[in-house]
Image 1: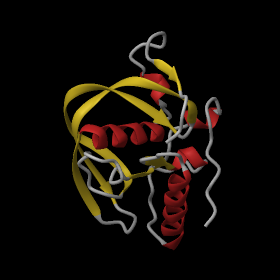
Image 2: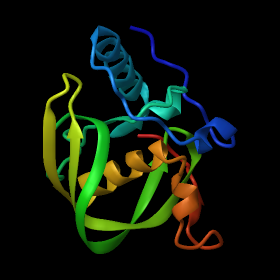
Image 3: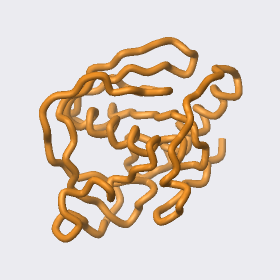
Image 4: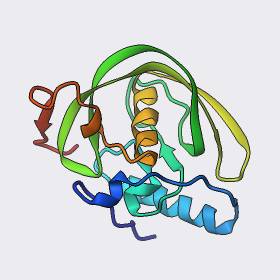
Length: 166
């Protein structure tokens, strides 16, 4: 399966708000598989959102399971995700497939509860903390046309040129 083309900053389509998914069918399953394959091609990617490949529907995949010492639910397909609760705040470094040359410090909730449908249309609820919570919030931001660049603590002091991909 070929990876989909990833839109990169400053492509104006990345600022577009995505629409909810209303039909759960074979076409959606095929797209989710393509999106997962595309995420797998990214250097160290733990998440991807449909708008990053030019499909403006509320679809996100997050999988932090390859990160050592990170609690995770494994591969989560979040369709029409909504954060229903959150607590605490943490500052952490983020990167993005759509902003490949930079990372930055962003404030996010430390713990979240996210409600969503999976790719088969079943309701799911996840309680996420730490790095996984950060990844989910980062990807959900894409659905609302936001990049981590929009949430930097300080544009002057918290944006860094990426040197090495791992």
